[in-house]
Amino acid sequence: MQNFDLLDPRNDYVFKRIFAEAPDLLVHLINDVRPDLPSITSVKVLNPSINPAELTG
Image (spheres, one colour):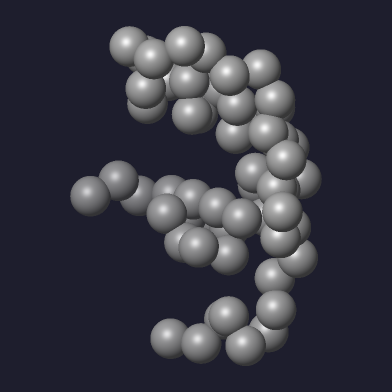
């Protein structure tokens, strides 16, 4: 397991904060995990906010 010094991007909250605030990074991630499919050029995060009820567990 990798040790992350600041915030673990595998955490749902951290992941959503990173990619909702920087959708260009999300485009790169999507294109990197599906290299055999046509590249996408933009994304729209439909629910960029994080509801406190989503932070349980």
